[in-house]
Amino acid sequence: MAMDNKPDKIIWIEPVFFILFGVFHLHRIWAFLDRNSYSNFWLNVMDNRGWFYFSLMGILSVLCISGIALFVKNIGNNKWWRLVYIFGGGYVLFDLFAIFVGFSFWISLLYWMFDVTNHYWYAVWGFFTVIGLSSFIIGLSLGKQLVRQKRL
Image (cartoon, rainbow, N blue to C red):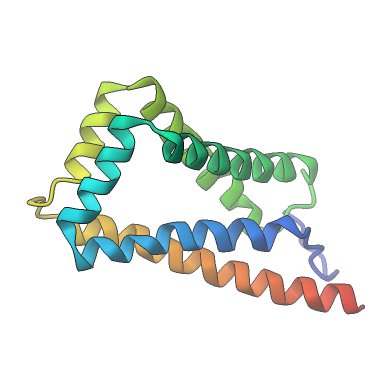
């Protein structure tokens, strides 16, 4: 991690990365409004693997790989938010891979998460919603810093 007084150099993709992931996770507010339709929609997407599934998988994969590559490219000069690329991106890539190849333990976990009678429903989807809000706010902050950086 860089521990200097130089302003953080932000690459244009960084605010985009956080804003897109924020919006993606914020859609989980839907889980609080209508459990059944939310659960049915995502289980249907996961089970049927249509064009939407593969498009979403591709977009999320490209974003995660780009973030990880950006982290690796800046080894020794990474800012705190780039740790999200490693941990968050690594998790999302594992999640996508586990769903794609059909790891039974992971599929069981997902079915548990999407079980509308799950006593932990609000905790699970609340956690992802907080991640989304945090990501979105970081994205807006990085976007603001990027605009300021371009003016200098």
